[in-house]
Length: 369
Image (cartoon, rainbow, N blue to C red; front, side):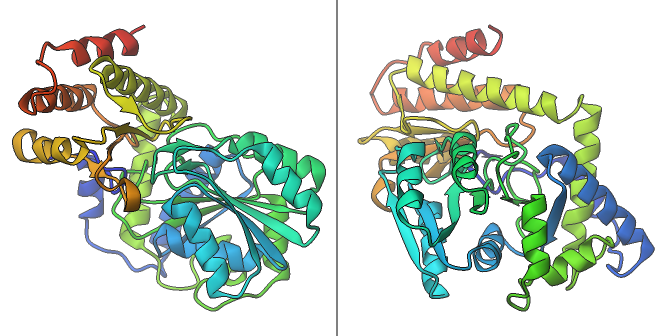
């Protein structure tokens, strides 16, 4: 079965083998060496001065960041399930929250965010997704974060990059907090979240002492010494070090970014060539989200049962009208081609159009253009 859901992604054989080695204790020089390599690799690709790794899903990091960096009022962008989650976290801790809400195919606009922060001086943090994976939408986070900082550099910009980190080169110059997860582009099992930090965010963490398990001040103090406050996700961190070794052998992270973008655009062109539509107005590179009101669920079912391809459906009101195809991670070209061929064959089985290999041709023409 080919796993093409937008997380978890497949774990490479070399990474599985590395993680299958006998477990080592997390309070040893041996593990500290792994931890130091993982920190270095993350700081290199994020281009941020510091990074934290937590034994939690990405939602744990989201919670920790809202509690740490928002002291007055949060402005959150809700264009899907994960933008909605920022608001739910604020509500759980009685943090005042103003929300910008859009359809799941519609990105936030810089102007509407600036308008709100200009009108409300209590807003001291803005939370937004880089890629909102509920609909495969890319927000213009770089443009928005630069505008926020130009207006008021004291406002914290918190970006959920869980389905963007390791997928594309995110400009983090105006982002204070960038959240990631192990089970996406890093091709690791679920269970570890990542937080990239600006210098301003580091200073805020050191000034605040919030929470217990998700206390970022406690974590920062430990992690700069290559250890953790609580039990570390040792196996995942060892796998992450192996991932960075694989990336280096392939020519560096820029090569991964280049291949991912080409594969994503080729897939989108292939699907459009057989009459399917891409759902979001600004598609993310991380996944192709295809809308087919009548056949989305049936296509996903045929892909799994007949062609051993597992894609993800939609959520909530999009449950039966879209399916989502992953592009995160190191994906062999032949597997990506098999997916678009399988979709075209599924349309043939449903009587929508006859299979003629058009998707395959469009994919290759785009990829090698």
